[in-house]
Length: 207
Image (tube, rainbow, N blue to C red; front, side, top):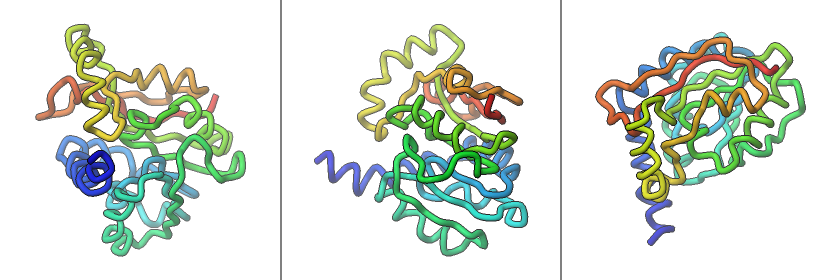
């Protein structure tokens, strides 16, 4: 049953959840900034493809280990003018040379990656010294009563949502991962329960 759920049901749920208006708004405000050689962590069903600026992106490498969600990306890949290469791999070990990437895009993925520290180490490694990490994530609320509910619900939520965690402190993960935050905006997504809707979005650079 778990395999059936993960292969046939979860990809549809992920695609729908990642396409709601509040998340589209965050993508629209961030992804167009990507330029040069771009690596997208957690490519998923290709929801970001609509927001890249084609004449700014030289090549896009999409990283995602889940074949079910990647299969749902096919129509978007066929429609995009971008040069895209998909690599069905985990973010904890990127098959790229150090210091070669202009932009890393990571949207709604740090909540799910099994080892976010290792993944951030890899993002920092592959980025050029003046490269940028563009991030939009959800995670730990600054409000104690919301955070208590995040802690209570995290285990069942993770089981239903493909390993997604409600309570990761995204800003602290980035700083501990060797990034300096050039820009950080936080808040609650519109029309979204606060327990899942506290967002972090912005730009970081390797320290």
